[in-house]
Length: 165
Image (cartoon, rainbow, N blue to C red; front, side):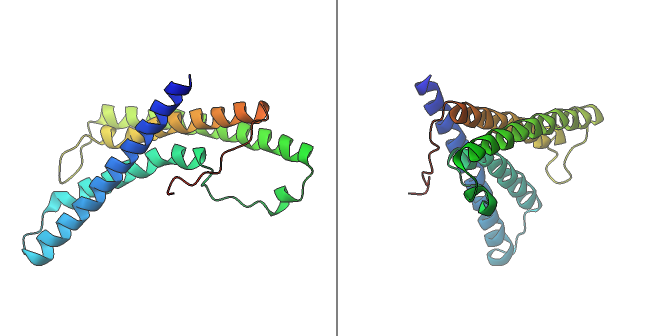
């Protein structure tokens, strides 16, 4: 099971970095083509936008794994340990419910885009492919919250490792 978790984390990291880096490289390429070579490429901005969106959405689970999401914990820090435990369970359970709803409506959106045959303007990418990141990220984010809930129930401490170090 531990090897599966490492593979999953590795794939999340690699795919998020690939998509995000691709977007940044494409933006740089677009700037060079537009302002240095005076030959703007219409497709660059659109593909860069989609790549950065995919990289960001794939990074949601990684941020959760490393506890890097924004949180306001002024009230939480003043609670007793048993209340903190209950608050962790409640917050994580509600987050799982949110992710399931998010994933469900992401699938509906993808299905609507697929059945409509909508394509992007400049490149002609089917929009259902662009929107496919919504249910994918919802599933990955849900799994990370389930992992967190299991760790809370096992009273296993959370890792606060900074992935940038």
